[in-house]
Amino acid sequence: LSAADIVAALYYRVLRHDPDNPEWPERDRFVLCKGHAAPIQYAALAHTGYFPREDLMGVRQIGAHLQGHPDMNRTPGVEVSTGSLGQGLSMCVGICLGLRLDGLAETAHVFGVLSDGDIQEGQTWEAATAGAHFGVSNLTAIVDYNHLQTDGTTEEVMDTGDVRAKFEASGWDAVEIDGHDMERVVEALERSRTLDRPAAIVCQTKKGRGVSFMEGRFGFHGKPPTEEQESEAWDELEAKLKEQTKALRGEG
Image 1 (cartoon, rainbow, N blue to C red):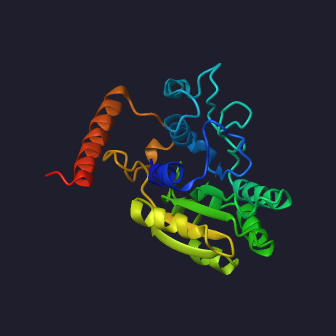
Image 2: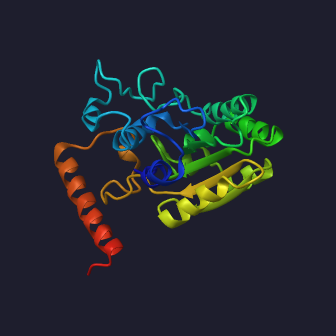
């Protein structure tokens, strides 16, 4: 839920992609570096037409194509299999270099969504150095910085300090925004396409965003709600959707 606004902005506004032609060479590439958040990508893929929405009920079920982590060999629209934290940004840099060899670097952009756990891994910062060194200007790294992990806060588990400053020190264009302010999210994503160097967007987010009893609590990391909690969550999310829809329409 902390990445829902980011992923919605990508799939509905920013990404150049075609559900009817997933292998379109000039498409943008999306890499969910934080592979454990696979359900949010699956939801976006289903709602934009890559496979039937009914398939979403098969997440992590034996025989279904929606694995616990994204699987490029089984799920339409998944560019690369992810899940091992710290490897995702390296994959993004590699994809950018491959696009350069294919003459597609000017048209195809690569967007990667990273987690707190990714930022704690050394390989991520090796990739950041490589991205700047090789001048992969068609790369945008988006950090879903919700500050919570399985065992507690990032500050308790391994403090990552000023993430924006670290990317900037590595030679990236780096900004920090509210990851739930859709106007700022879209603006930052679209701006990142225009730069002459890799871009990092550090999004301050809340785990469990939109569900009051989940927001800011690490106990729901990888743990499904009870049936009663699920019903309560749906009621709250649907009420918020109606409220926001009326506001967009200018209704009282």
